[in-house]
Image (tube, rainbow, N blue to C red; front, side):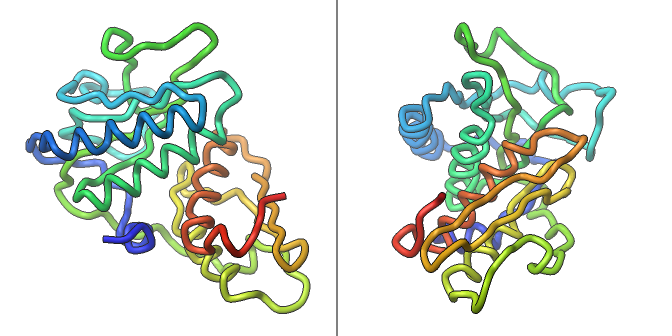
Length: 223
């Protein structure tokens, strides 16, 4: 499965079966986590066989989780929200190519500080549940592309491909509060629109990674 195929296949999954993740898959994920941490100056950690984070109820519940015992602890400096989204989604799509299912989780979990390390100046931004889903999830409702773009003149094929992938990106409660603009032939900007829910910068990082994968970095630069 390619990354572009993973973008289409990936859906948020909240129910998982009791099946251990193979050692070879864990090794591949940890290899990519190390690269992401180095590139993004983050401290992402893979937590395996830890069911307490999703055991019990939460006052802030969006969707019902069950069977979650593996997750990515998305730790990094305060203010690194966009990088958390960008590199987290890079790991999500890799997980999809490895046969795993995932779900970004902002509030519906209990922190387990004895299972991961938070350095001074860092914070746990969120977690990403992962494992083998009961099912493959369902696609979130799609909105018209025109609501999310600013383009003067014709739209290049690479830009359209990028936008199609961006619209498939997971965002907090599927709010999709972002805008991508083509400002000249090969320059693109992306911004998050105002939201009361939060996680706008994390969402923007996720969206930008989807756009890059499908549009091809050889075709544009971020401005």
